[in-house]
Length: 211
Length: 336
Image (cartoon, rainbow over all chains, first blue to last red; front, side, top):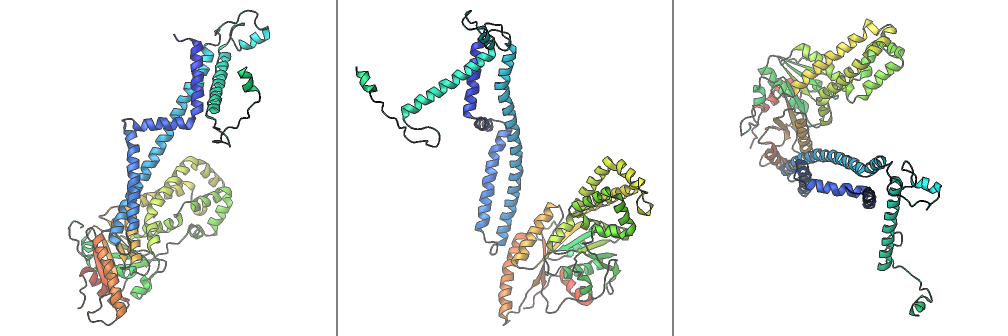
């Protein structure tokens, strides 16, 4: 079985990645995948765009026809346009409600897969020691904190381990971002985005190296 | 009747349609609705036992057209056996109904305090309910009178469509009211009865029963209006752009309400003689021709398009209407 230590670490990594990508992006991506699936709901989304282009085409044709000079043609176009428009509106609101349901389901699933899983693991392994500290390394008070809330004294609890993993992941990601930014020499974020990074040469550093 | 591929260009098929019970005549103001509906009524009176012509136009031109005074009650038209006419005002309001109950009713409403006001608010907040009330009133009268055919000379376009919508509006409103009364009926009737009852010794249950009765009437009429064997709508127009535009819109909307239309009257056509020196007449004729072609193209397949000439005199009085009405049945032959 997968070690609990690794499991918690992977979970934290997953949460971090999801948060970086953003909730909306994830929903949009999954929706895109969903509409490509060979199911009737997905096909409807394709039909909707055909309908929309139909409505636009008819509207353009209607505009190009003079109602005064060519009323019969214009009226026929208008009948078609109104019909297509009605169909499109009905279909669009239908799709909208489908999308809302889809988003709700995805949001629920995401919560279960991250926060829910974390909470579940924290409860399930709450009394288990992740690993033991060598005796006498840290004073009693700190041992107590590290084993919070219910792990045996002198061990690391799952909650503390999760916090540690999250912090390390965050620091590593930030650190690698910083290294990458420095190497590229361009500001990646903030109001000065895109500008070259200005660094002052520290006098003497190069000289020392040569020694 | 609408089964021939080549549609007859007269209203004869409508005269022959013996199952018809309701005929609506509508169109923009000034296109000759009243003249057309009067003419149709005269022709109908020849083939049917009893025909009633009702004007719902607040302008009331029936009296003008026939040259005699009509009122809120059906009165026979002299010179046309089997035809009666009446004029109703579609703008009667619910306040009229309340005040019709006299001061008693007003006081009772006041006495009810909050509840009375709530009822009034509710009645006003349902769109179209006041017109619907007067419409329902008319329907009740008409149903009691047992005419074989009823022709409505409706008000200009906007009004017409609202008028035809009333049964639907009314049914919805009444449904809401009965649902409400089922929920709160006990409470309200307690309140009302504690106050000494409604005026004229009515109880709240009576009022509810009346409402239910009205709902059934409306539902019945609604069904009849949507039946193409019983009801048809005849748009009247003149061959000009705006009139044509409005007519097309109206026909589409009528389709939305599932009300049958299969005949159109094109009125006020000019037929100047070949060697006519009148410049205006000739250019106007040219314009009318253009729109007539469009009308034939657009409606020729599905509608009886009846073409009526513009006469040199006003069509007023029974004799002139009678002679004009002949042209609804026998297509007008233009003099060379």
